[in-house]
Image (cartoon, rainbow, N blue to C red; front, side):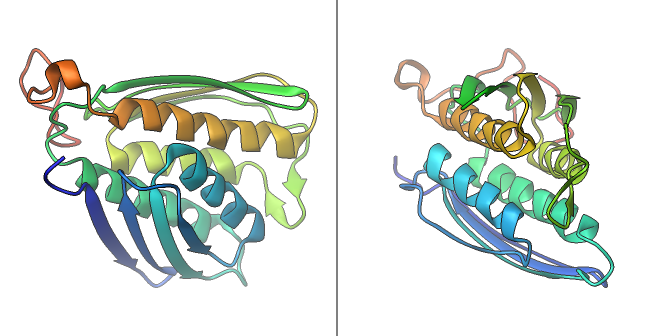
Length: 205
């Protein structure tokens, strides 16, 4: 590939200060610091299993709660992926992964369509993991799908352990993204849409 698929995005508000850099054609290297240990762990899994190189440095109002930092990190990572994809020329576009983690099994299906939509069918046995509200993971996936411009379906098929359920969702996202952004060598110079464009979150295809 002649042009590197990379992007760096910064977001600064009164609630958070975040910088993220992504390389879609990396090797799964990561440097992640959000101030939320479990979120760091999930973003590291996202990087490792997608093979995206991912750098995230985030500071947020954690003295209030983890909501703003979690959600805004999803926005920034999604925007970085969107920008790195460019016009989406040659991508496979669709991705599907079923990922087990011990007793839990989750499925992630996605379409890099330019249409942002999340279907979230994940029930959490626990309301908290340590100090983190588990409902915040839906907020992360929603923010990511919105800013990345993808249609994203996340389903936990079964599982008892909340940690395992969440981790299988992130690993499923990683593997589905890895598939979807891969260049299809049979159509490497074309946009995978009859409309001829997948260029942005306001474009339907």
